Structures are given as C-alpha cells and as structure tokens.
Image (cartoon, rainbow, N blue to C red):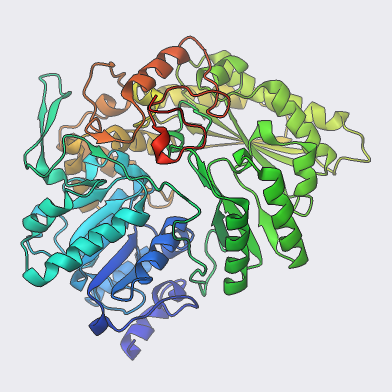
Amino acid sequence: MNGDFEKLLMKTQKPARYIGGEVGSIVKDKSQTDVRFAFCFPDNYDVGMSHLGMKILYGLTNSRPNYWCERVFAPDKDFEKAMRDNSILLYGLESHDPIKDFDFIGFTLQYELSYTNVLNMLDLAGLPVLAKDRTELMPIVVAGGPCVCNPEPMVDFIDLFILGEGEEVNLELLDLYAKMKPYSPTKEEFLREAAKIEGIYVPSFYDVSYNADGTIKEVVPNMPEAPKRVKKRVIYDLDSVYYPENFVVPFTSIVHDRAVVEVLRGCIRGCRFCQAGFIYRPFREKNVDTISGQTKALCENTGYEEVSLSSLSTSDHSEIDKLLSELVDYTDGENINLSLPSLRIDSFSEELLEKIKSVRKSGLTFAPEAGTQRLRDVINKNITEEEIMSTCKTAFEGGYTGVKLYFMLGLPTETDEDIIGIAQLARRIIDLYYSVDKSKRGKGIQISISTATFVPKPFTPFQYEPQATADEITRKQKLLFENITTSKIKYNYHNKKVSLLEAVLARGDRRVSKAVYLAWKKGCTFDSWDEYFNFSLWQEAFDECGIDTGFYANRRRTFEETLPWDHLDYLVSKKFFEREDLKAHKAETTCNCKEKCSGCGVSKKYGGVYCGANT
C-alpha cells in the first residue's frame, strides 16, 4: 500500500473497510497458487462481512493450499469516486491485486436490490459488464445465493450460476478449472465442461422463446452438455461438511459483529410466502455436539463476546432444550452473550425462557405476518392468537417490556378487516401486559409494528399471485395508521416502490436484464439503501426498454404458464405449489413436516430429517 493510496483512504469514511490485514484474513504466495477466486459481496463491507456464507466459502476455498480466495466488497460512494478519479481498479483485500487478473470473480446474490452493484463492481474492476463482451477464459464470472433460484434478470452479465449449497460444487468447479487451465481452453470449452456439473447453470446455453402475450413459450438447451433442467446442490450431512473454526475479525464495526454458528438448514413450516423455507429444503440439523464444538472453537479463536445461532427457525431443532443447556453453561461461564434470533412464537415457553434468562431483555421479535386468524391460515403461518398471547404473557412475566411484531400488507385474499386486525392485536398485547402482576413485569410497555409489502417470490405457493399496486398499499398503510390509537404502539412501514422493484426483479425473465443494465448506466447503485434508492431512474429504464412493471409485479399467473425459472429444479414440485395456492384461497392450512409429510417432492435421499421417501 503506497503513500498516495493511504492519503486517499484518509479522505473516506471508515477507511478500515478498504485496507485488509484483519486478524484471521488469509494471505498466500500467489506464485504458489493455481486458482485465484475473488468472493464479491455486492454491498458495503459492513453488510458483507456479516454474511455467514462468505465466511464458510472463504475458509473452505483457502483450506486448499493451491487455491486462494480473497474478499471484495462494493466501495461506498466516497471511495468509489476516489477510485475512479485515480484509476484504481477494484481489488482483493488480501493482496490488493486487481480482481480482473483473478481466475474467478464470484458474486453472492442475497437480495434483488443488489443487482446494479454487481454491474458497478465489474465496471470498477475494469471489465466489460456484459458477459458476451468478456471473450477470454479468465476471469470467469459466477454467481450463487438465494436469488439464483431465478437468475434470468442477470443472465446478460454472469457466465454461470451455482444453484443451491456451495460447499461441494464450488470446489468441483475450481478443480475442473485447475485441471483444464494448463491446456488453455476457450471460455466456451470450459463452460461446456462446467455445465456437466450438477448445480451449474450456464444461461448462454439456453434459448428462450415467447408467446404473443409476452409470456414464455419455452426454454430449450442449445448445447448437448446443458441439461433440460438444472438441479440444485444439497449438502447431505451438516455434521461432516466444512465449517470454519475462525472468522476474519474486522477492524471496524459491522452489522453483525459476532461469532455465528449454523444449527440447521431448511424449514419444516411451509409458510406460503416464504421463499427461503422452500429453496433451502430439506430440513437438516446439526448434532448438538457439533454445534457446541463449533461455538467454542469460534469464540476462542476470534475473541468474540457474543455468539448467534443461525437458522430459519432455531427453536425447531429437535434437541433445542439440550442444545441450549449446553451452550448456556458455556456462554455464561465465559461471559459470552448468546443471541437467539429466529425463535418461533409457538415454540416459546417458560422452559425456553429459563434457558435464555441470561440473554439481554431488550425486547422480543415475532412475526405473526397477518392480523387475523383467517389470513394467518391463508399464508399457512400455523400460529393462533392464543399462542401469540401466551408467548407474550410468558415474556412479560419474564421481565420483557418490548415486543416487535412484523406483518405484511397486500397478502393474497387480504381484506380491510385483516389490516385493522393488526392494530387490534397490538392493543390486546398491551392490555395483556397490564394484566400481568406488577411484581413480575418490567416497566413501560412498547409495541413496535412493522409492515412490509408482500412480494410474490419464485418457488413458493404464492409465485402465481399478484402484488398489490402502489395505490392499494398506500391506502392499506393509511387504514392501519388510522386504527392505531395509542402512543404505546409505534408503526413503521417499508417503501412500497422498493417492494415493486423487488417484485419485478424477483419474477422477471431475461428481458429484464436490459432494464438492469440501463438503470445502472443511469446511476442506480445501492438500491437497497434509502438514501441512494431512486425509483424514477428505474422507471425511466423500464419505459425505455418497453417493460411494463405491472406485467411482472401485479399480474396473476396461471398454473399452465411457463415461468422464467421452470427449467431450474429446487426439488420442490410445481404441483405441490399449485395445491398449496389453491388451499390458501380456501384458508386451509398444511401441517408442518414434523407432524406429517405434505408431499412437497423433496426426496428422503437428500438427508431431510422428516422427509417422506420420494413423495
């Protein structure tokens, strides 16, 4: 790092984001490495360094002596300007080498509003943004993460996508490259071999045709190596798969500055709006001894004084009581705070409260999602108001005084009664607090209500449903405001235009790629940040590309329609989603996987704890 570079850093906010050299970072001799991989998180350092997937794949790749994975984050606006003004190319934090010289540039697509940052990072790297213009073998630009379940709006920019869980397939891809690289293959030759690996989707190897009404007619492979449907990868055994014993410890504060231990993958619940609950199936959990050992190793190696258990629903672990007993004994003894996100309302009990009595009583967060029982049944939330009230009573008696409640507006079949029900539920929780003995409850009740606009997502039963229009959401937000009659309830809501954009990008086809490119050219980056989001520029891009946002966001799909992601296989069957959508409109619930197999299509062979055999 030379003096001129250091002077630039001193003019930026949080220069520690851009220097590397943190405890736990891995620096190798590049002359001794065969494959270099730039792991790019398309958001700033504070967000990206909190991402567990990066920590896992960073450690896994670097566990191979001849492979070197470096971290790359989107520079904030001030440092981006300094880079462009001084012709500094985007670089890896470990070596400070330009990533354009690496073998792979890999992006994790965690949320749709990061898409323009991907383009911006490629441009900052000094590379053509469009995949067709990158004709040389290296670097190969890849992408993985949950948004890859519908990668079509990004196909113009990415060479290949990795579907599903990456621990095995990432190394298989790098092994293939290391094997072929000495023979100087063309980019197409490498991609043709890569397409043979299960979980690899090469979008240029597929042709899409359209019907007169704009819907997709068919998606057809144009290379013999490309499968008709690309199946996602699944890790069968979480106890034996790689998990890091050390994390890179940042010099500066980040969003989640703590040790994180994954306890399970997948979800048994089947909430009909929840994409993660379906694309991460089957439900698999780690052994208590594995979790305990990984917790101790991470805390001891990093020095963190807080550890969080990561999952979609921590309390669904089959041995949650034993797990918490072991962990609390350790964390209390070492003065480490144990964080327990993702607790289910129907799993919260006096016994669980006793187990987590050392956790800070700053407040509890629950997600009823809907204000009435009818609508909770529609979305298959499978919690009752009795369970909500019982949970809150247990929490109040345990000293908690704050409750955060998350809901969605614009859910299928929603009525005004359902919206008013949100305010009424919050009011009943306040009344419940005052019914608790003063000697048990804490001082001062505060209920926080947050509403997000429902976004229909691929690979969910609601993938067919329309999103409510912006005008409808405005009316619903106003109605809820009018029915909140006490200062003890605070109401926050999400930007409806952000949700509209998210819906277009989530269910878009590859024609939307042109709008993504044009929006970036107009200056759109960091779209998930309120201070940078500019919907008017996006609307200009959609208009200039002839894209009707309502076609993607506000239109109901038929079951017969070919969806942009139908050629990708995330193991849950389309017939199951159709059945669930029909049941939703009858307000009929489906039991969770632990109670009974619902026949979603995931086979027992993938390691699911409760899966039926080939249902």
